[in-house]
Image (cartoon, rainbow, N blue to C red; front, side, top):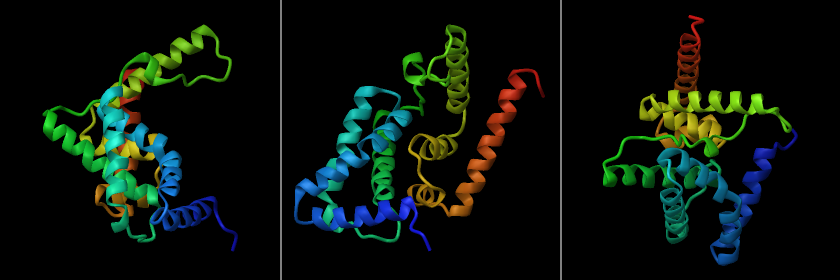
Length: 193
């Protein structure tokens, strides 16, 4: 049986994790490898650059301080980091007494068009992106989190389940229903339903 990219990544992580137990430079490699993933997740949950940077820093500090207690349970190291990120974001919301936000700055939404889009395509893509983000913001927190973990952080269903405390099947159902509901809302706004 051929080894998949994911299996290869897990094997690389196992080696780095083993080395990081004795060498902080190896932990630095794990930090570099997962920094963008963790930051993207945190940023899309809190919606502010400064808070996202602070929380991301806290995630890796927490991971470093608790690294000796990390145990490989068959899930990628990234799932453990994302669970820490999830908990710290939840703590931030409790502490701040805030509602869930998804960033809406047009600079932050990205462009969905091709490499060299026309100005009209850029405007249309930005409007679509802003509309999608607005609709996501209107979802219950659990649905927002599942979408962000899947599509912004790139986690697999099993990893999302670990972060959210759900079974893989429950995550698949939640994502399917959420995407279907978003599709219906978009079609309704366009007058197609």
